[in-house]
Length: 324
Image 1 (cartoon, rainbow, N blue to C red):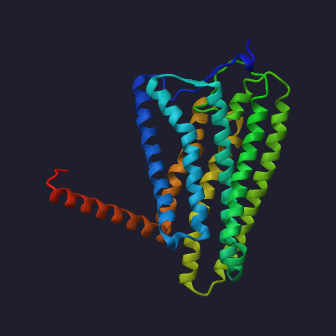
Image 2: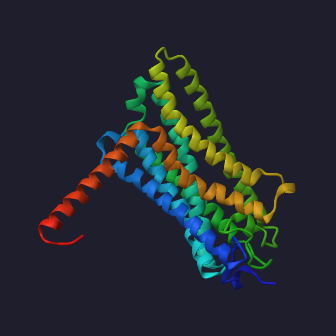
Image 3: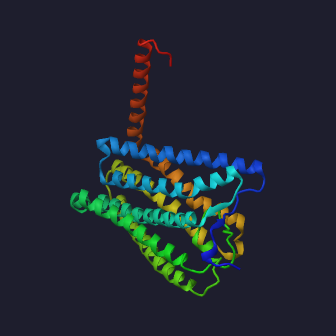
């Protein structure tokens, strides 16, 4: 028996037992991580460098890409390092940091998706008031509120969780430090404090979910009343990308935390955790780049600019007698 003051490290759940499978998982997750870095990095570069994309919708998309990068970088690099080194260890401080940053990024992302639903609602249902309701100052304030809510939620849950005495060992049945699995290590009735904090967060999350659903009901009603088929197609194309991202985000988290205990198992919990913590940050850039013409054009121009620079550098190097 031990308590939290004597725990210096935790043992995470390994993806596989054999060395060959560990290396296979490392290669797979390295590919996913690099794809997430590339996709979100291209969105950040395209939005920052092209003035046509300096609009509220793309400003929020830039924030979403930052949050996706933070979310996947919190969990995946440590899991890949453990798989490569054939270990399961994470330090106590590392576990605390992982819980805090994962909650911070995931909570802020959900709040930002709610803000993005409001942006689409105003753009389609109240276009004449869009400039006044979603101006540059309002965008900055809403983005700051999303990031701030994520920070407060992370502080609340991290402080509550790690203030509990942990006396059920140090093995976490997940590939990263996750609050439900850490609470299983507690032997104190004080976990009711965490339940209270969880009820508060769930209530806020449910309120955001209701707001998103209500916004899209109003959006679809407005779109269906548009006389122009071209206008309906443009409105749907900008809304369906956001709706697809929201659906992927909410469905994976709901399945992770609301699935029946009868079907729960360590392997299923592992797969579900990968689905909601790894897949959305890697897939979101693909969803937006495939469905948003302005973003595709900006990325295409960016690659064209890089190709021109490479060609110019190669020409100059050849003229100077250098071999590339």
